[in-house]
Structures are given as structure tokens and as C-alpha cells.
Amino acid sequence: MKKGVLLVNLGSPDSPTPEDVKPYLSEFLMDERVIDVPLWLRTFIVKGIILNTRPKASAEAYQKIWWEEGSPLIVISERLQKKIQQNTDLPVALAMRYGSMTIQKGLQELVDKGVEEVFLMPLYPQFAMATTETILVLAEDIRKEHFPHLKISDLKAFYNREDYIDVLSNSIARHLKGKPYDHLLFSYHGVPERHIRKRDITKSHCKIDKSCCVTPSPAHEYCYRHQCLEVTRLVAEKLNLKEGTYSSSFQSRLGIDPWLQPPTDLTIERMGKNGVQNLAVVTPAFVSDCLETLEEIAMEGQEIFHEVGGKEFTTVPCLNDDDEFVEILSNWINDWATLQAVPV
Ligand SMILES: C=CC1=C(C)c2cc3[nH]c(cc4nc(cc5[nH]c(cc1n2)c(C)c5CCC(=O)O)C(CCC(=O)O)=C4C)c(C)c3C=C
Ligand SMILES: [Fe+2]
Ligand SMILES: [Fe+2]
Image (cartoon, rainbow, N blue to C red; front, side, top):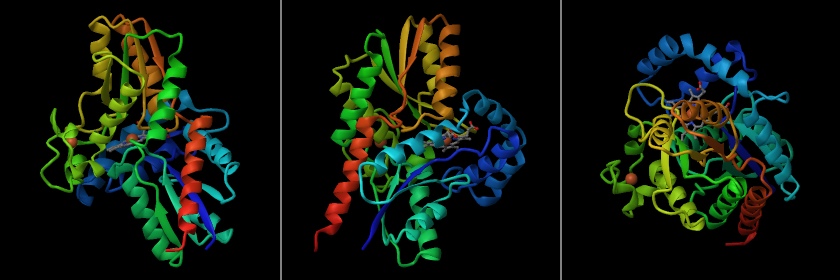
């Protein structure tokens, strides 16, 4: 069977204008795994409220970070795809969960090259129903409808793989070398607490308190909070960070439901007020720099920190197309291809 690879990232609007941001946000936020309320209520919240004001504000934010070549998230993902393609004989395609670079087009591109078996790689270190799960479900729906003979296997959340933690730790160390910092903040994209409880396979483990995410449980296979906190713990261990000099927070809250705590913006403010002079921030829920890292952290976060008296604010870039990151992703692809080749 001829094999191929589909990398999938989140997506971006086609341009940083309200006209293009609106349909993109509509597709994104109408996803039942992103705003997970009944359709009538989601339609009211998204189309009746959010889409009336947010496209203009979001477009302005996108304009601040947009590159000449396009959306940073898309351009970086394309660079990553090209580099991975140089390391493997299998065809490697790229798609986005939302927007015009659809998963259907990505699968079609592979099928046109004769591919019969696809390794689907959601570009998210941690599992979340709003990211990995929605990609897997949509890919399966498209497969059933358009490519029934295609076989798809997927890359599991890689938050605790040793090679990933090594690469992330090396990147952090490299970017912070010669930049003394008092505190390293690990800022992850937030999700509503309800998302965590919904995917608790034990139905009782995830209390979202101080101890549940550090108490071993099968629930952690699908617990975004556990997987984020594990990344922080493993990187801190690898970099020998001292207790009290690092912490985790969750950014980008939307709506009024309780989201994972503590929020990044208030954490940055509190740190500046409490005398942290030099703050470094890393964003390991994102593999590619995007609106949430380049605008929300590097611009807004920095502004908050300076307003309350903080001095140096340093952001660690995402892994993007870092050569070591390319190497481990390519290794996982080649391992998958070899494993699949072994007769059972
Ligand atoms: C209910 C709302 C949202 C959930 C849940 C959510 C989860 C989630 N998102 C990412 C990664 C990204 N999100 C990005 C942008 C973005 N996210 C939301 C809302 C939710 N995300 C909105 C409304 C937006 C659009 C921008 C805005 O209007 O503020 C991006 C950036 C995309 C880009 O083009 O640069 C990324 C990446 C993760 C990892 C996640 C759950 C774990
Ligand atoms: Fe998001
Ligand atoms: Fe937990």
C-alpha cells in the first residue's frame, strides 16, 4: 500500500480583513467541539453576538502580525512541511482544520499521488476536543464520504515523548541564553473547564483541582490540563529550573464560562506587581507562532508587564520549523512507515 502523510494545523483567515475573518471565525466557532453547546445556543452566541463585533477587532489584531507572505501560522506550517518532505520519500501534504486549505483538499492531493494509507498528524502536542479531536472526526467523515478505501492512522498527543521534551527544552535554553530571567511562564491556550470534564473517561477523576492532574489516572490520556502541566514539569526537570521560578497559565479566554486557571494576562500583571523584573514566556500548546503568540503574548502581554513596572519581557518562539523539531517529526513518520511495513 502506498503511504503518505497529512500534517494538520488550525488555520487562519485568507486575509486580515473583517470580510475574510468573519467566515473563518464562523466556521471555527460553529464547530461543536469548540463551542460545545446545543446548536440553537451556539448559533445565537456565534452569529447573534460574536460575529457582530469580533471580526473587526480580530482583523485589526491579525493586521499587526500578518507577514508579506501571508498568515504566520500558514507560512510557518508550509516551511515545516517543505523541510519534512526533504527527510522522507513519502508524499507529505498540509491542511488546516478551518479556512480554505481544507482536510479534504489535503487528502485529495495525497490520493492523486496514489496514496492508499495516510498518517494523519494533528500539529498539537496536547489532546483537546477543540483541536486534535475535531481534526480526527472531520478526517474520518471525509474519508467515509469521499475516500472510502483510504486507510488513516493518526499521531497521538506527543506532549510527554522524550524527544519532544528534549527539543522543546533545547529551544527554550537556546533562546533564553544570555537573557537572565526571574521567572519562566508556560502559557497554554485555555479551554473551558467543561471540555476537560466531558472527556474524562473515568467520569469522576477530573476535579480540576490542585491534585487531580498529578494523580495517575487513565483520564489523562484525554486530559488537556494534565498534558499541559506535564509539559511544564518535564521541561522544568530537563532544564533544572528551581521551584518557584516557573509556572503555568492559560490564555485566550472567550465567553463567560469558567476556563482553566490561572489566566495568563492576570498572571503577567501579578508577576510585574510582585516584583518580577525579567519575565520570559513560552507557549507550548502551539507548534507554530500565530495570532495567540505574536499578538496576545508578545504585544499585549508585554504591554501589561511594562504597565505594572516590569522591565524585560522575553518570548520564546514556538518550535516552528526548528531543525530538531523537523527531525523528530520526520523520525515519527519514518517509524510509522517502517512499522506499517512489518507483516503481522
Ligand atoms: C471557545 C473558543 C475557543 C477554544 C475552546 C479554543 C481552543 C484552542 N485554540 C487553539 C489554538 C489557536 N486558537 C487560535 C485563535 C482563536 N481561538 C479562538 C477561540 C477558541 N480556541 C478564537 C476566537 C481565535 C481567533 C482569534 C481571535 O479572534 O482572537 C489560534 C490562532 C490562529 C491564527 O490564525 O493565528 C490558534 C493557533 C488551541 C491549541 C486550543 C485548545 C487547546
Ligand atoms: Fe483558539
Ligand atoms: Fe486532572
